Image (cartoon, rainbow, N blue to C red; front, side, top):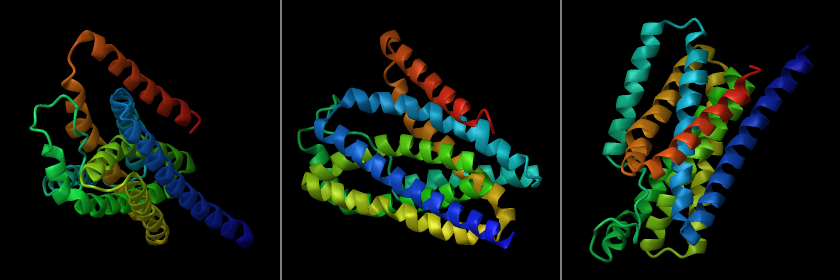
Length: 265
């Protein structure tokens, strides 16, 4: 019995490490491919898919998981409120950056505007990205400890929202004078902070099961905040029927994907 318990602990930790590593490498590599070829249409499509995955992961899976744990609902709602306000403040002070603007995207700025801004912000982008990925690692660990299926879905949601964000970061770094190779390597190093967060989260939360519902709620607040305050406003700027229909279809695809992956839970 002891051997089975140790095997389960070992497999959970390995799953967390694999999920954080794969999420990091996939999101950075996909973002690099899109950024370097400047496939702006693909960026827009990823934003729409992201919204469906993030909102459904939070509202249909992670939050129900937390509220079914037996924790006090008022405390969980307070945690949700605190999480939303925390992410607002983090973004307000540029600790988290979710920017997808780049040269030649149609916005009216003088030539070189982004390069000038990015020159100041290039390294700050990397620091903020590292902190963000560290937090993602903790969230993935919390999800795996609650339920392996939730861990997989959370990893998928993080990949989906990381790709558009990392595309914005890549373009800012390129404008700041980073070569493509340097931008990719530095972003990849930052993504590995998710593994550090995953290991720390595993050992912190393994012995503190009562904290799991609150971490899941905090994770949900982050997904909801990013989707509603950042990604959806970008989509609203494209208000024609021709642009809206693909957005709705891709949001629905994101929701359907999460429902399909969690239907046997």
